[in-house]
Length: 497
Ligand code: CO
Image (tube, rainbow, N blue to C red; front, side, top):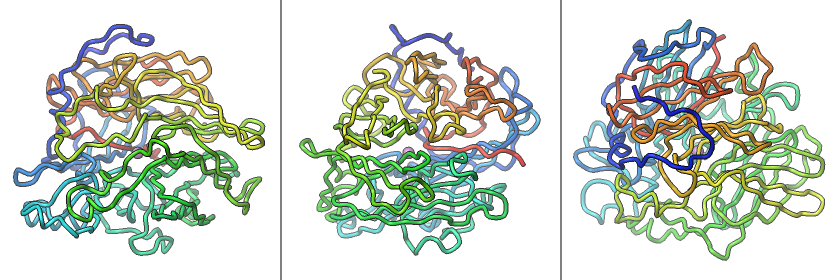
């Protein structure tokens, strides 16, 4: 086990990582486990932590000697870590997508990837093949009796929540049309309108883009039922990965971005490599009224947004005439060019993610932007009970150094009121992924709970599941994971009933 560094405030000096340690996580997941009890390396798993940590991410990165061009093109592999009375049981399965099954049989890549992966064979075979491979690799959430493996450009795949067996594509009980896009970033409303809900969206992008906003019940027998649905059209190409909610609004940021599809159609680039930040473009905030809500049925409100590119938002809330949204801004869209190897990227050449706050004044249309910290970060969240409310605390993955880009090597707890931070770091040889904050259900204290994180230990070339206390980031337990899982994407927590 890595020796965790002591908590410290904004790092002044730091241990330099070795890129080989970071890149060593990129491998194929070779084994599918069923209910394997994880070996405790140190500490103790809190007995009151009962539920399942589901996590999605790319699990197949190479076939027959060909590598994906970008890890985001890797096939989705779901890991579930089931916590019960101090034990943790691991099950993992690839999502049996149509393309995964075909490629397993063929033993080579048959499809192009959105982020630039080319199919095996002659370069020309990529031209004019614009089929999208639904790789189900971005997020995993439970809705009703279905576990949904999400990928934003197509329908979700439905899995058995216990065995992780794939049932097939889901249309969410008839809500989605065939091939309809469904975002990989649903938000869980803790009860702004009495009952809790899951809110999500789908984007149909083009010269004019359409956002469909959908709200689902997540309670009892009604869980999974659609209770609100609206569609709004907007000018311009919309690349929307995430959004945020308040009681009255669903808030999107439309990045100033250009899409030139020609190199994609000609087979030279993946679709996402044809996205470029537009230097003189104007980003927009799009506020869509929720139903019910004070502005329900009204038209969306649109505001000029500050420059930059945003994948992920932390949270949003309302205060008087203002809507406040915290987001991770990059100076421009980070892309891996066709001649680059993602395992050899130079972190210094890529823009870093910076957490910023925008205050949108609904009366004056003015936007005020502030910055929390110059430290590079990603995958930020608040206590889920504070979704859409003004939260005091947030947890995120951060780089080790205080500014500039770098791999994610620390868990950071940031006080959003004072901007003070504490860290739990595993630099120089360890790498973190998205941390998940699980509130202690028997407490009303905002930062009472735990942090779960699946880390990559470059020294042992193994993953470990770590548990920290959410309030002071003290280490609670480290468990050994018997399979290798590449740096992943998003996950969620489901309490035991
Ligand atoms: Co995301």
